[in-house]
Length: 185
Image 1 (cartoon, rainbow, N blue to C red):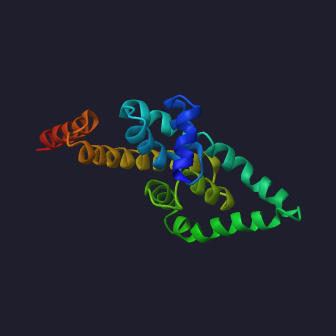
Image 2 (cartoon, one colour):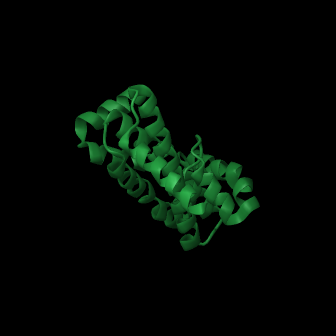
Image 3 (cartoon, helix red, strand yellow):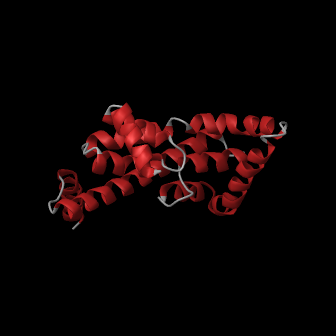
């Protein structure tokens, strides 16, 4: 299936647009778009990162504002009622983690790039918990940017291991942290 998605996007879209659309796909999001853009399409970090972030955050306001009415409508249909209950069940499973730490819980839930977390699920949980839209959006945005940075560094490290040479992006990150540690000392 991964090969089919990869082939579809490589054959049908320019590389930047492929990264943008992949970042919009639930469960894949920027966690898949960044490695795809850097490792498969060989796009530079400075190009992949903002495209993936924009593509990933774009659906979030719509989810926050519209998921509750959509679920209520789905519950009224005979065939889609199970889907509505599945969506609510997915959010219910994540509820305790988010509520326990409030905004920090939502931030960490979105920021830690593991399967089942991310901007889509974070927005779903926030909407079904009736969190304030503006506050939830900002929290999800910062969590998603953090996850994107984690994936970017991970992709750069994998590139370095695979090619045997350190990508320019990884050199820049290391230089930045070295300069930060020198100014702190």
